[in-house]
Amino acid sequence: RIVSGSWAPASRIWDVGMSNLVNGHAGVVQAVGFSPDGNRIVSASRNEQHALYVWDSATGESIGGPLHGDSETITCVAFSPDGRRVISGSWDKTLRIWDIHPG
Image (cartoon, rainbow, N blue to C red; front, side, top):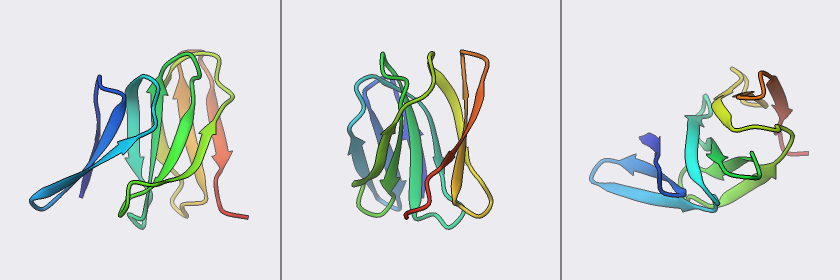
């Protein structure tokens, strides 16, 4: 599977011969990434909220977010190797570590 962002306020999950649309963003999807196990996606949108979202990669359903904290657009996201955290980088010159593990 592949996940992509676009100037449209959505991410798309691509699989062999199909794709799932992940809606919920209020602006351009600036950054996306898969968890190490492939079960979750993190995405960041370029809007006034500067928010992160976590999605179920099989269904496209939201399972976390929006997560707020940055004062500017988030430009990159990545999961930690254990999948419990997400790191984000922003135009506000900060890196943030988000604990997204359920519970």
